[in-house]
Image (cartoon, rainbow, N blue to C red; front, side, top):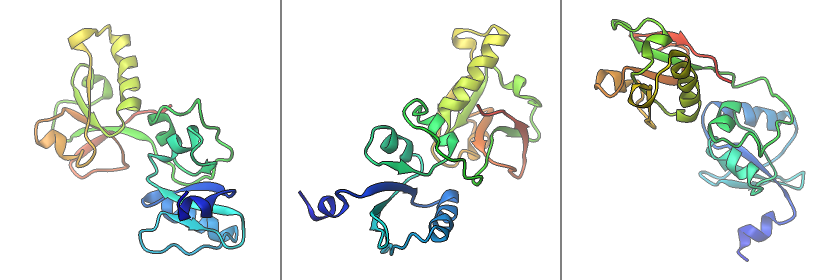
Length: 191
């Protein structure tokens, strides 16, 4: 057994987002709870000095899987990330923390012909949330009677999603945003 495995043995393994919008709020929460630790640059495992806890810094999108499969005991991440990872049946939300709120939205070029989410049915939508967007558009397609090749095509793009329309990859994008320059925003409810 290596030194790291030995040092975390018997500790509560607590997953924290390693960067992004939730990281800062989580660090504030830990400080407010007097959880004392020092994180060396780029080190993803920290031992808490005043409690029997090891903090595990992970990408927020990995936390549901690590918790759901029992690799860590507890974690903080977004509900959207849990749903996108399809781990909602394997994790239990213990406490809503009230930060990091967002909604999945569809956006289209401002000067285009698409003015409602229904106008995107049967078109191409790119997103980094293909499970949630896919579920949403599947419901819209069913209501419109679209099947097979008529259905909305959802494609995954991990970064630079906003460029997809300008580059001809998509008719619309589905992302977690509040505004984007020359795009119109269409509210899209997230389950």
